[in-house]
Structure formats: structure tokens, C-alpha cells
Image (tube, rainbow, N blue to C red):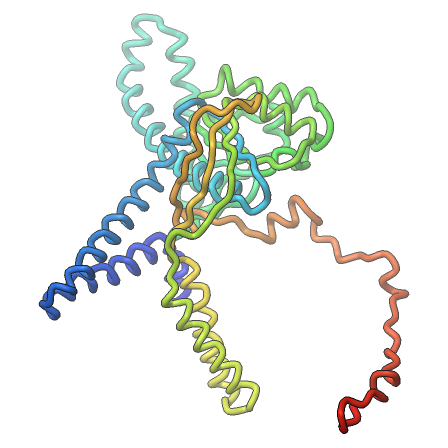
Length: 374
């Protein structure tokens, strides 16, 4: 249970790991007075401050991503970080929107009586929608992440709260959309219940014109195909965030090397039958959690460039530093079922007729290399 709980705190794991290491470097000056040890102290201090900067910037990067509009589409090749970056940007945006929704609601509550006296019906109407949104999210805050709606299930580390799910009725504007909501729409060119993968669905496209003018919320999309609907959605967003790739900035190499060494020793002893069944199970479980744990530690850098929908660069290529995992994760099985194969069994044409005949090795067997017959 402790190991499972540790896996649910990836950002804290990163902070703890580097903080302990950096503090150890700084304290080395107390035990090793020579001048050469000053390098270790300054190295530890520099790394400590950099880790804090990375964590602080990660939680604030939503401001940088969304300061030019309400909707952004992450575009780029597979593996460039579209889903990871988009889901975490949407998550932190939702946290900001929830705080803003709460403050707006309680402040405007004090104004209702005055608006009634002065007959300001437009403000009362707007407050009604704000109140509906606040009460809806507040009632479910313990189980769901407020203000976060996603096309793929997103789970919050630490609490286990889930995101709300995008439905086809929302795209067709049959269901009311709550104010201050942040939508994460992964793979906008894919079919998610509305016929929009390669066609211009009028109702679906009308939905994307609505938030630009009337809806007080935000959209974070990802896209990598050229479907007509995807192109239309991208045109309706404020700008495109072109992701150019991701690389590791900090990686727990020491933990990784230790894990690989233990794993090789374990497999070697297992093959030779030197471990009892219970001991093999215990060590195997330890290795499983060690592997999962060190993958929660570190940072990766994602290069990106903001562009207009017509492909004109808004600024220079920039780099953002993200924790190895982030604040939320998506369930890969749900992702595969929703977009790729819908839980269908593997089907290959001619699979039942596939046969593998023994290979004729006679010519090879008759070869003689030196004096040895192979």
C-alpha cells in the first residue's frame, strides 16, 4: 500500500528526490572542508534552485499558454508531447478556473439584492448561469475535478478524482455547458460519438463558433491529422501551439542504473533456480515498484512555437520544462478503446490459414567449417 501511494505523488517524488540529493551536496562542505568541495556545494545549490524553478513554472505555465485567447490546438508529430502537455495545461487551467468561479460566485452573491433594486436583469441573468455552474461543481468536488471536462478519462494524482467526460450531446449543443469550464479535447479529428472525422458536420462546427463569442470557458485541443472537421476546429481556435518534440532535462540516472543492476542479478538467479517461489515473487514485486517509481522522477523539456491558424509564427521557438508525469494521467486502455479499436479482438486476414513449415537445414548442416561439422 505504501508503494502504491508513493506512485500517486509524482511531483512530490521529484521534489523529494532532488532536494535530498542537493542538500547532501551542500552539507558536504561541513564534512569535507577543502576548497575543492565548494564545487559540490554550489552544484547542489544551483540544482536545488533550478528544481524549484521548474516546479513553479509548471504550475504557472497555463498563463503562458492561454494569454492570447480562450482556445489553443496543440499540433505536432506523434510523441511530441501533445496529449501530455495538453492534458496538464487543461488540468491546471481548471484549477485556476475553479478558484475564480468560487470567488466570482461569492462576490456576486453580495450584489444580487442591489441588482434587483436597480433592475439590472442582464447581470442577474449572467449570475444565474454562474450560480448553476458553481453549485454543480461544488456538489461533486470530492469525486470529480471541478471545471475539467475531457474526451479521455483524466485521473488526478494524489486524490484519484476523475475529470468529467465530453459527450456527443455537448457537441450538438443539446446539453448546457457550465460556465468557467475547461475542455480537453484530444484528437479533434477522431470520431467521439459525432460524425466529424472526415465530414463537415454543420451542428458540430456551429458548436465551435459558439464558445468564441458567448461561452466563458477555455478549450485545449490536440490534433495530428488532416480531417476536414479537425481543420475547421483548428481554424476556430485562437492559435495553434506547434510542438516540436520533447527531451529529458533531468533524469534519475543513479536510480535507473541501480534498478538495471538489480534486475539483471534477479533474472540470472531466477534462470538458475536459486530463488524460492516466495522469494522470487517478493523481489519481483520490489523491482516492479522500483521501476514504476523512478519513472515518476525527473523533468522533460518540450519545444513549442505559437502560430496563427494560417501558419504564421506568433513568437520564437520556446522551451517549457514539465515534470516527468505531471498532475493528471489518462488511462491508456480507455484511450485505445475510445479511439482505436473499441475493444475488438485482433483480426488478421488469413490468420487461420497461416502455417509455418519446418525449414530445410540440410544444406547448412552439411557445411564444414574447418575440421568441425556443423
